Image (cartoon, rainbow, N blue to C red; front, side):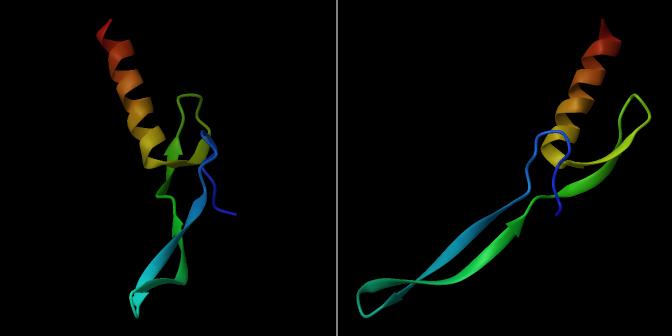
Length: 67
């Protein structure tokens, strides 16, 4: 299963709601997947990480080099 190895984010279901005769009818369960990319950690290990984790790691690295 596709899953972020840092935060554990994988996928979630979103349900489209269609209006039929003044009532909502839940139709089309759609699986929305996390945006996973290959990323090399500072330790040298390659992992699949979501974009939010990659952005956070880059910010932390930038702050560490500033100090």
